[in-house]
Image (cartoon, rainbow, N blue to C red):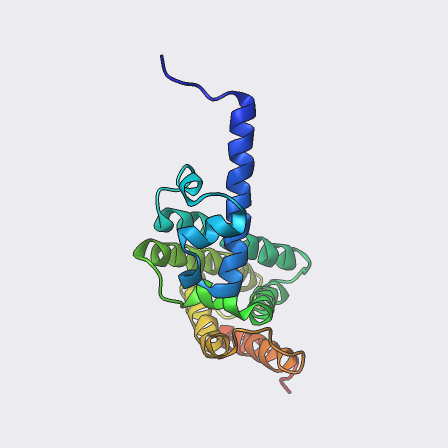
Length: 209
């Protein structure tokens, strides 16, 4: 007869798994992907390394789950920012503004999400991450085109190009910093990226004459 976990045992395991993921998120933000070894995560979570293998078969499996958790948090933040604006152009600007500002405030974590060398399975998740942001922007571009606020264009292609350009623009500062960016830097970088985005779309920003 197969063993069935009792509700109490399952609840304990679920709580332990959650503690592991929270510990891993903290390590990822502090040390990057290379610092998230199974032993380091177990130590941060306060459990034996062997117990960690009850939840994740290896580092790659843990990393995928960890990456998905962090990415979901970022997508949620962008989605909430978009919902606060009424016009498609401002909603597109909100995506870039929110993503860039959050990245610059947590450069170590953002560097991991975007460019830090990792396992192939993590690289695959990065592609999903980029596509998720692309899709958020593409929906708003399509709405702006339909409303006559932007020139006709392929929303998905333009959105993919914007995601790539913004990620590339942030890669250097994130790699160099690995510490929170000062308040003097944020006002320069974030509006510049928003202006670039609106001009790339064929729109006008507030600095245009």
